[in-house]
Amino acid sequence: MTSINWLDFFILIFASFRITHFIVFDEITAFIRMPFISEVFKEDSSGNMEKYIEIKGAGLRAWIGKLLSCYWCTGFWSALGVVLIFIYFPIAFPILLVFAVAGAAAILESII
Image (cartoon, rainbow, N blue to C red; front, top):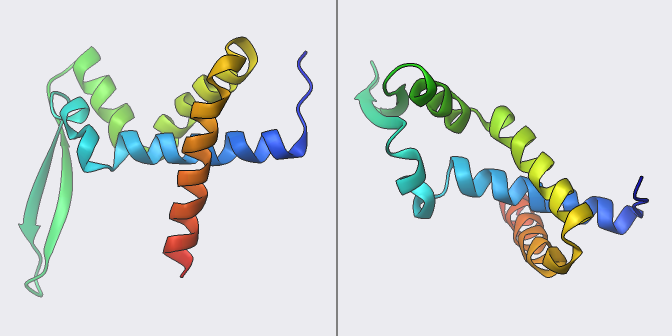
């Protein structure tokens, strides 16, 4: 088993957070979600527009749509990927570090 220090552990946490957000929410990755989900805007009773996610298709397509619309589900698979990359492809650590810094910055931005 690979040992992990606390700094690496937090880098993996922040990288996983940022990659998950990148896949589920960011506009730049909408092309990944587009074949599986639709974003529908509807007006509520007070006149505000609310965004709803509609899953497309059935079978595997619907399953992927459910996965991409669920932050917790995508987060699990992102975390698994990040940990496997950390263990088996240590040369990719600088990329994980960039995602981690971006994730930490996003969290700080939302707090401030």
